[in-house]
Image (cartoon, rainbow, N blue to C red; front, side, top):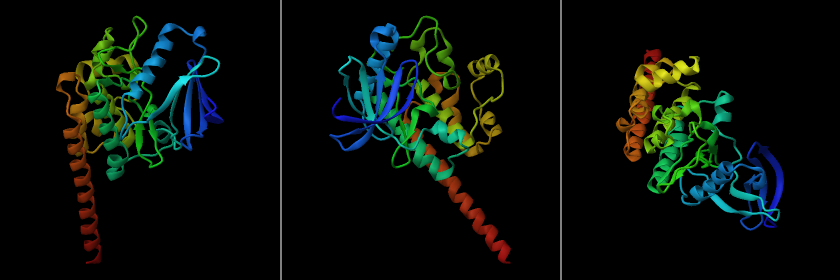
Length: 288
């Protein structure tokens, strides 16, 4: 660990702690995640940490927080080293009232997120925990996906305690509420990405304020409809692109993220062009 100069602690939880450090070899700031002493942890937590490192090491590219190093320190504590993202997470920005609309929505979130998902899926990895807290603002101010602690990869299923649902409830696809967590496939990541995009541009999720059990029942039985998205502020045009990502039947969700990316780009920039045309027309009318 001589390579790293600890600067400050960024946070800690049940699994361990995260610190900001300076990498004296690469000459950049990094985030180091330390696992608590394995002897004090259950096997599930220790296995997830190892799997997180393995999954993250398998992929690199646009829309992904890169894993730079991993190992065990002099006290026998495992650690993972990622590039430090100084600008917070999408969750922080949503909570602060920031919204992504128009070209910014596409360039900063939709494009890197869908490219990142395509990359991990091609590598045989299913993230299973796509949510605003796991999307980090990079130096370029675009968002990158991190935290592979629940990832399923190369036919191996990340372990879960018996009877527990994998992932974060608000972003779980309907099929993930089944007792068999293997039901969460690649199209589950597509579903979660759709919800993240909705929340980034509106600050809300469909069926906000509805009791949890009723919300789950509605989503599992009916999915999320185009009107549900418009009710919380998504434009009709954008809702038509998002709705196929949020249907209850996973087999009916788009599987090709490249095609989905094209649909988003065409829709968002067409909306932008229409807005400019309307403004220009309004300006001309005012002059007359």
